[in-house]
Amino acid sequence: MTKPIILTGLRANNDLTLGNYFGGMLPIIDMAQQKSDEYQINMFIPDLHSFTTPIKHELLYSQIIQTAKLFAAAGLPLDNDSIYLYRQSYVPAHSELTWILDCFTYTGELARMTQFKDKSNLDESKLLLLKKEQNKLLTLSTSVGLYNYPVLMAADILLYGAKYVPVGDDQTQHLEFTRDIAERMNSKFGELFVVPEAVKKQHEFFGNDQGLRIMDLVDPTRKMSKSATSDKGVIFLSDTPDEAAKKIMGATTDDKAFVAYDPLEQPGISNLLQISALLSGKELEAVIEKHAGQERYGDFKKEVAEQVKSFLVHFQEQLKQVDEAAVMSKLESSEKAMNEQANATLYRVQQAVGLRPKA
Ligand code: ATP
Ligand code: MG
Image (cartoon, rainbow, N blue to C red; front, top):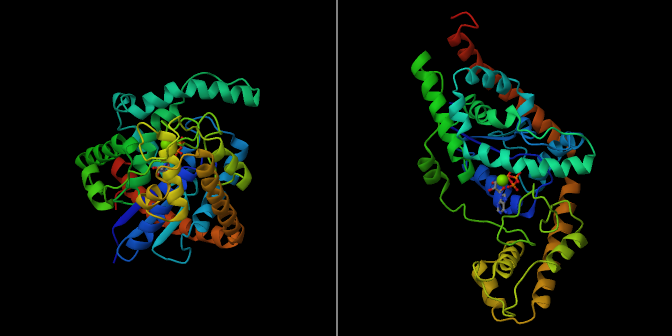
């Protein structure tokens, strides 16, 4: 009776960007809709992961609810019983299993995670920025949370026995770690966990076309990112349509004065072509063809700016229509079901390590 599980999370550590919408949200919603007949879909908001790097805590709670509402506005069906939408911190078993797994994880395993190495360096500049903004004294050091976060991620997956977890390149190592710790626990204590499929199988299952990358408008050689240090090159779903249009008009281009799709030589213009295709729902090729050779970048930008504007007007209208009570009730009913599933796994683990009597 139980269906295999697909699990995916989207961090709520800031407002979401146009990149998150087209590259993260829409594909997840499509996948959930397509696979929900055969699979249980666990979509969660990893709120405990939100502050492994510094954030503005006074905004977090509303960002979490906002993320759930954004999913609804982007078309996630709230009435599909095979799709669960829940907040990680409302299922305390995530934290409890993390502690237990911590005690079977080696410090060396976590220290060599590239994301830990990258983010712990990157943090210093971000910390300084926050420090300036908030005018508070923050210690310039890396948190144990950032170091430990792959273990929490392993708990997120193993509690439900999820086989399929769509992972981007930056999460590959963490998924491998999840498999390692699951196998380690299974060989020590007997079959406790379902081991998720290896990365290669995940790619086969989800398809390999994770290629979409909307680039930063100011520095089009970098990915548009919700935690970018400057907002100028980032379109947030919460930007006013006029603000967003301005950002498009101010996008960095080049001096070739000839619209062409060439991400290496003309990254800014190519990015705008890509954005235009996504916003208009047209094939990229068709958009390239339409604008090829256009000499006045201003005219081209104006067109894309109009598209961004009407997209945001429409999306924000949809967001307003989202029934917050329905979203809250979806979260709460999902959390009830997830607590049952997660606690059952946690109890087996507690028994295995000797915290609870064996049946
Ligand atoms: P952060 O800076 O906090 O890492 P981010 O904007 O990179 O923020 P993630 O939380 O890492 O966002 O990713 C969420 C989802 O959005 C992922 O599925 C990711 O592939 C997708 N995504 C993020 N940025 C882009 C982008 N510029 N273009 C397309 N997809 C993106
Ligand atoms: Mg990212």
